[in-house]
Length: 294
Image 1 (cartoon, rainbow, N blue to C red):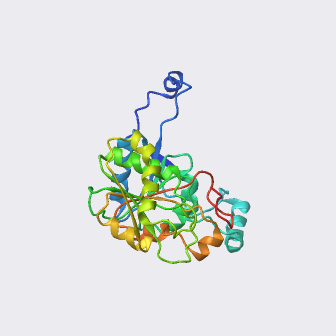
Image 2 (cartoon, rainbow, N blue to C red; image 1 turned 90 degrees about the horizontal axis):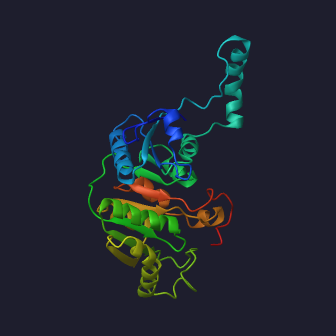
């Protein structure tokens, strides 16, 4: 997928000068990539990505929608004719990469991919991407309110760090919410022992201790921890109406557990009324049948 730099990119002084003056120990600048196809939500995606790049000092790149998945083959002559005849026959057998797959590959190596909520297959994209994905509604309700961090037993440190950084960059408070599904058949790993041995107060104390290190790093961010029972997807969608940003850690559960107790990430991403930032756990997307052991 091709891309082009947009506003927010540092000015270039020429390849030779840029390379000669670069400190080899310096880490490359972060990149925010945005895919904003034509439509009513395009402006919202570009505007949000531009603000994110400006806040973090990253370079902004706009991804250009690729043509249909076709190999580069000569268009003329016998070879081109044969390719055009054979491709439609082989496509149903071999399969073509979905837009979500191509975007996931195009996002690799960036700091974040920003896409519209109405994008077909956006739930597949957040499940497959190696990088954090920000999903932007056509018309976000407001630009105030807290940054909401959704907590779960396996929430990775990367999601917590991302939420604190987002709140710090925006000068917003952080609301960390742990929603305990009321079903006795929950398959989530407990904080300790049986999932129903811990009272909401006990679990709230656990999360306050867990977040203590980030509170030291970001003393300017007011933090509130809430623990409640309820359907996580419904509650988070409701919270999105008054949140500035919703940060979700992508589930690390395997296919067996996901088929029985699906992660709420996909449902929240599709229905939230504020931007949603989905942060993957370390390593490649989870394709095995079982969850990570840690």
